[in-house]
Image (cartoon, rainbow, N blue to C red):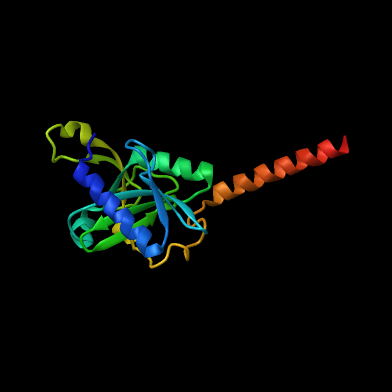
Length: 185
């Protein structure tokens, strides 16, 4: 496991800060779960991945924000299946920032300056750092936004893909036609 107890406590503190600011509640999931938390209120429910860094956003951002590609794929898949947004929260020493993971529709291998780049990278600050190198998704700093004062004010499906909406509509239409045929028999 590459996360220390200290890292985990920082994530819990950031999650408490978010939920207190928004007046929401949270449930923490065990290690190795797809999401770290689920945040919820009477109006909303979101999957949450929380990361913390001991520096300011401007110090970290020139390199870009990286998310493990495996973690991203699982969160996006969970979000799509459950139709519940998946959000990434980054706690920096100067505040918390966030990103709707649904903004990344199709990560790709292209130029180093383009968002959605998939590359090999990871933690090199540990004795067994070879195990910390993995496929990562590069997130440009312009997509990471300051934490809003209320999570309830955000749209229900902030970054629903047109493809997913089209598939959902087609499924509903298919079952509607099946019901009509069944009623005719």
